[in-house]
Image (cartoon, rainbow, N blue to C red; front, side, top):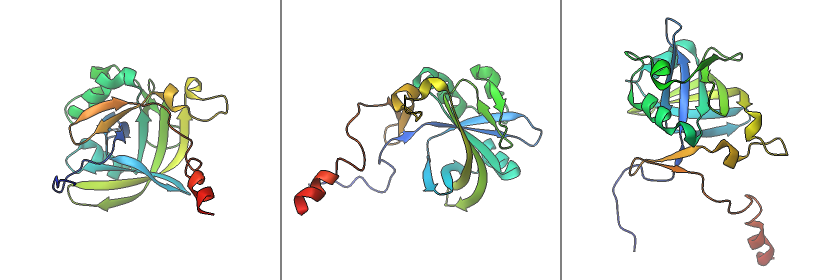
Amino acid sequence: MKRSLGAKIVVGATTVWVIGTYDKEGRPNLMTAAWGGVCCSDPPCVGVSLRKATYTYGNIKDRNAFTVSIPSVNYMKETDYVGIASGRDTDKWQASGLTPVRSDAIDAPYVAEFPLVLECRLLHALELGLHTRFIGQVLDVKAEESVLGEDGMLDIEKVNPFFYIPGNRTYYGVGRYLEKAHSVGAQLRKRRV
């Protein structure tokens, strides 16, 4: 029998993202966000949900652009820090030791040290309550050669991202490989014939 836990966010792990923006004065800013994910494949789009109180919220509204930098577990401490400090009164780049790089596709910076970057142009902002969902069209993806497999595609184990579990506010790493998606279920199709 299942026990009710009430209305709360406890489902699944979300990849930890670092969102890069410029403020009105052109200063680079970054913040950690865990409420993000893919929301469309054609055109390729991602969504990230931010509270209006964040400095990044206003930056995205002003600049209509943001980057998503995916940190490896090697940068967990720095990533956690940029999620708990405010860009209004702190130079998080200097404090964390991370390096801003100006995107050549959009008006936003990304993190040089992180292995994977998505450069996004703002398409929509959907007010949801406490959070606003920013939908960004991915104009370019940049990946370090070291995180690509022999097939030229991303190798998740080489990216070595980490995930946020909202129910107990913890981070976890990538687990073991299980099965190939859109393939393992085909076994059931064959049995139904």
